[in-house]
Every structure is written in C-alpha cells, then in structure tokens.
Length: 196
Length: 196
DNA sequence: ATTATCTATAGATCTATAGATAATGC
DNA sequence: ATTATCTATAGATCTATAGATAATGC
Image 1: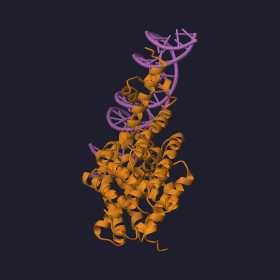
Image 2: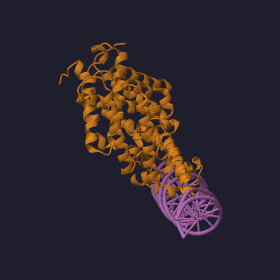
Image 3: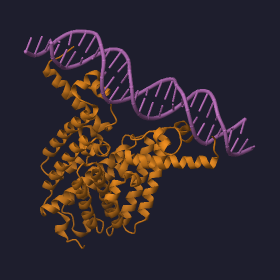
Image 4: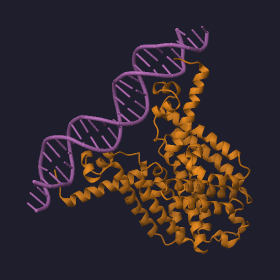
C-alpha cells in the first residue's frame, strides 16, 4: 500500500489540482475533503498526511489556482486581448480553469485570514498587470484605470455567472467588452479634464 | 404555546429579517436554520410551518434583502450620490444591511434556480436604475455605461470586502469613486468617438 | 378541532482521528 | 523502522420530521 516519496509528491499535486479546480467551480464550501481525495484517486484517511487541515488545502489550492491566472496573464500580448478572452462566454462557463479571483472573491470574504492573505497578494499582482497594460496617462491614472477595469471584469463576470437569463448574461459580457475596448486604451482624465 | 395568526405573521417577518441580514453577512451557506430561528426568538421545530424548505427561506430572504436596496436606490437624488454612498467604507463594513446583489453574487452561482431567478430580476432592476441615472447619450450608450458602472461597483466592493489589506481596500473604493464621478456624468462615446 | 410553537431526534454529511496494512528506505 | 495509504469511525453540525403542548378560533 505504501508508495515512494516521489509518488507522495504526485498524489499531493493531484489533490491540489482537483481542489483548485473544484473550489473555483463549486465554491470553497461546495466540495468536501472526501470528494477531493476520491477524485484525486485516494481515500479520505490519507488526507491529513498531506495537509494539516481542510483550511490548509484551501490556502494551497488557491495558490495553485492562481498559477492558471499567471499563465493567462502571460499568454496575451495586450491587456485588451486579455480582457477580451476574460469576458468570453467560454471563460464564463469554465470557472474551474479560469480566474480564481473572480471565482472566489465572494467566498474569500468568509474564509480564514490565511486564505485572505493569499487572495490579497494575487489581487495586487493583477492590479499591477492591469496598470501596466493601460495605454497612456501617468502612473497614478493608470492605477486608477486598472482598478476600474479589474473591478468591472470581476463584477461583470460574477454577475454573468450568477444570472439565470442567457440573454442578459451575454449582454453583460458584450457591453463590458465594448466599454473596455475604449477604456483600456487611454485614460479618461487625459482626454477630458475632470470638472470637479 | 400557540399564538394567533397575526403573531405568526410577525414571527414570519422576524425570521425573514434575520435571514436577509445574516445571509448577506455570512453568505447563504454561512448560517443555518436553527441559528436563524434562535435569533428570531423561536426554535427550529417551528421553521417548517413557515417555510417549505431551507431553500424557500433563501428565496424569500433574498427578496426581503432587495427591499433594502429598493430603499437605497430611492433615497438618493442622483446616481452619482448613490454610487458615492455605495462605495463608502460604511457600506463595505455592513453587508448585512447593504446591497444584496453585491453581498450574494458569488453565492447565487451555486444556488437553486429559484434563487437565481429572484436575483436575476433584481439585477435587471438595478441596471434600469443605473441606466436611468446616467447623464447624456442615447439609451443604448446609457445601458452600456450602466453595465460598466454596476459591474465595477459590485466587483470593486466584493474585492474591497475580500481583501486583507485595509490600505488596498480603501484604495479600491476611492479609485472607483474617482472614475465614477466622471463616468456617471457623460458617456465616453459622446465625448470622444471610438477609433475602430 | 385546529394550529403555532416547542422539545427531541432521525438521518445525512462533513472534518478529523485511530489503527491496520504493506511497501519504502535506511 | 518508517511511513504512505487504507478502512472504519468518532464527534460535530445541519436539515427535516415526529409527537407533545397549549392557546386560538370556529
């Protein structure tokens, strides 16, 4: 029954891969330790030789999920292209392999401090990525614009996923795509000065 | 032990009030039937004379939570003022009495079809409210702008609540407030024509 | 007689632990 | 000898039901 240390490492990453996917799909409370272990090809009892607690799994699985996001951000040439893919129906329908921040923002509010810390760090990273991708403007307006785009992307996708009406869901994604195609290019403040 | 029909109605609304608050605060899975009943001053056993199932409570409590949102939307003279209050730290720190869409968007994705339907209807109502409040532009650009503002408000507040870092949380709300103060006034398309 | 509410509990589900099993690794 | 994994289960928690109690309402 016992396997080698190398095999244990494989088991460990299988568990993480399953958890990273299912937590994003069903929420942090949506899948249990036993189900994760079963899908990873193991049984419940072994779990606690891999993780100190269920919450430790959540923390590591969240970090694992963010690796997908790292890849996504890297694979696009511009923020505009990234956002277009982000707002796709394909991304909407596959939360399990998509942005972990969007999939779990609601859950993290009720999660442990450790989970929140991992989440927070990744939010900061995404904001840098967005700010970097915004065209024109000084660094402050880029940052502000990044926050608008990121918030709207996360919120819009959350709504598109929660809503029961396919037409509305599509409309949300499409409308954001249109607004983003303008907003991602130049900062508003540089085009027309704010009135104040 | 038995009380009058009128008293039963009072008990019923007490249950709903507690549930509407606690679901928003702790999430749909975050509080149980027994705790809701206890806080409403009753005991578990009576619950099923009031609601057919826990899910029925979720549906009714969501509708109840949206009454607060109706009130919020009514109490402000302009969309800009509404958004300023929406993005406040006070609203961030009191999800139990705040916007139910923001508080529960993540949870609704995993909820029953009945819950999704109630949620979806209220999303439509909010979008109308936003579109109505946008200054200038034709009805199509108002609608698109409304979707941007609403998505960013929901997403930004969700992030501000999930994040572990007070400075970042405040920055998110502040930046959105700044961008909104411009975006809520005039549609981008009417100021500078899109390139494409 | 009906029924609003209560106490008690059945039954399901979930995290975590105990103890057994058998292969690894010194 | 150590340890990776397994089966079994303790203990907590949650939804829903059963049956008792006593006040309402016909």
